[in-house]
Amino acid sequence: MIITLIFIILLIITLINYYKKSTKTNTTALITNIITFLEAFIITKLITNIFGNNIVNKITSLLKSTLKISKEEYKNITFLDDSIKFITLVLMSLIIYYILYLITYIINHIIITIKNKKNIEEQNKIINIVLGLLSFITISFSILFPISGISKIYNTSLNEINYSSPKLTNKITSSPIIKAYENTISIKLFDKLTEYNDFKKIKTSRELQGLTTIIYVINDIQTENNKKHFEKIKEELENTYLLSNLITEISKNAATNWKNNKPFLGETLKIPTDNRKMIYIKSLEIISNWKRENLINDISTVFEVYEILEKNDLTKKHTSKYLLQNLKNEKFTTELFLSLFKNNDFRELLPTIMNFGLTEILEQVNITVEDTYINTVDLNNLTEEDIKKEAKVFTLVINEIYNIKTNNFTYEDLNKLETNLKNIKESKIINDLIYNLILKLAQNKILNL
Image 1 (cartoon, helix red, strand yellow):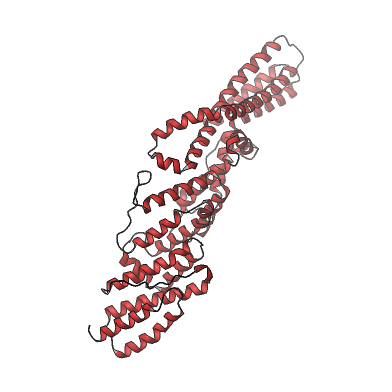
Image 2: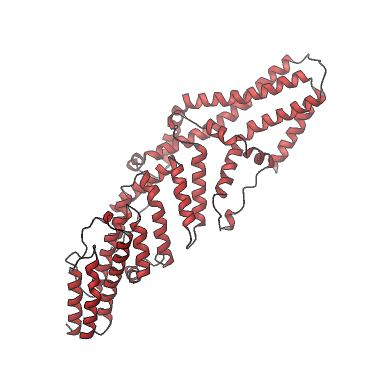
């Protein structure tokens, strides 16, 4: 409202001023306004590209001291340094542009006022009004194009998907004049103003839109049906350069530190000391080897697995017992296994999860795990149908061991068990040692050993 009022007053003053002056003076003023914009824009570009690095390096050094980050962490996250420099350059460009625009506007208009002081040519009132409107548009656009560009980015982010959160359904309340400039070349000029020789791969509008969209999408994630959210996050990461590389390096270094029981940015990850530890360590090992393309490919899987866990309360109940209880469910296990298998990096987790389940259930029946019941197999040679069979065999093994532990057992049950366990032969990941172990458990149960 305030911005609208200010520019309405500016419009009235401009029209009155142009109405009184000669047409030649007004034409000169319009040309001067255009030149003022070009001067401020071009000089800003020159200053930031020639002197920007020296200024930014000094500011970056000051910021380093305020960040809660060790020298080693800062060194490893190279894109953090680039991010600080780039953000500083963008802010510096905007400040320099507005200062230069104000200075050149004042100087240029003082010059034309002096030159046209004795100009008493006749006036064409209609042309003067048109010239006044054009001058107003030139001045207001020169002032507002960065703001309208950012406003456009914000509103575009809000329109990316149909958000369900009420907080994300309303567009930013912009001044009508800002909205009017949103659909012009404001974003292109904003990108051009914030384009630097050392950061040619980075497009400011894309980075800002990627950041705002990802924040909105994450805030809108529900318990289920989040496929559109995951796809949008992946798309935004693909479209950004600085943001995606920064997230990759932060994730990679955090995983590396946490895997080795070290804090990262002052934060520590509490890794369980029970059998879940093997899953945590393997996951961190995968993330610690991430590159940008891994982040983009893996992020959908990370959220998809989170959604599966959340639907089964596993994000709230973290115990090994509760995880094992869910792994006894063939539907849950198949869904989890397929989600991991579809991803080239996280399919490596499958044997680890199966090893966890077998180790956990065997410890519950007081068996010390000495042998490995998991084969070394190239998972890339398996198909989705193979993984469905693996999930079926895995849940069968878990449930049979659990049944032996909790139920009475007869020789008739033993015959049924032998028939059921023939499915283990179909597994390419679980080996035959578990087959013999389960039969021995059943026989001991019958004999009360």
